Length: 238
Image (cartoon, rainbow, N blue to C red; front, top):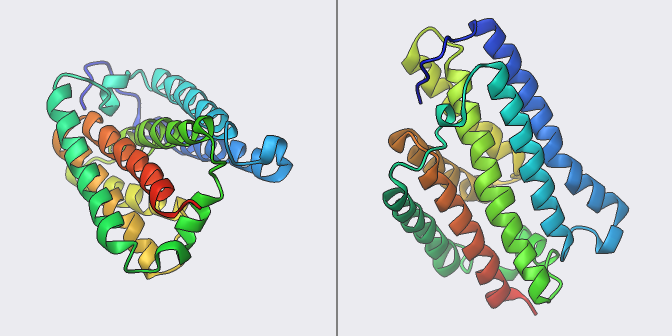
């Protein structure tokens, strides 16, 4: 996560960072609100999930491209590189798969199962069709695994830490703030929901920090989301 180009001032970096984060959160919310309010084509269900994923991916990557260009950085700077893809992919599948196994074999069945708010929320997004299920998976992998990792892990942590004079303080402040804001974005309302979001968030963050690449966290996040969507459908969809 280094860059040989001349670095902009820390003040400029911080301003660009804040604006990018605020605009980014708005871009994530816009398609949810649009389909949730208008109920066009059924709302947040079926093929509309594919459209949400596409909007989030292209809008956020364009935003990050512009932001990185202003900061005179490239995508490698925020950890988007594939020098150890096989190793990172295996790490991602391992950790994402383990969390999915723990969730659906032990945690969810013993904490309410079908009565859980998150399970009910997911069930409302299925329409029973193959296209709808594939669209849901695309949202989980592209909108979640790829786009959220680029934004919440790669960009957020890397850019914010560079606004600090002390590298270690900047890194850990950025890591903690990233974990908190990402978790809050999922609107947990009780201890169990905090547990369910904090554990994978910390896992994705540690994969990014220790590999210094986004590949493992993207694969872990996307693989878990895919497993969760398929397992929820198999175990709980009527």
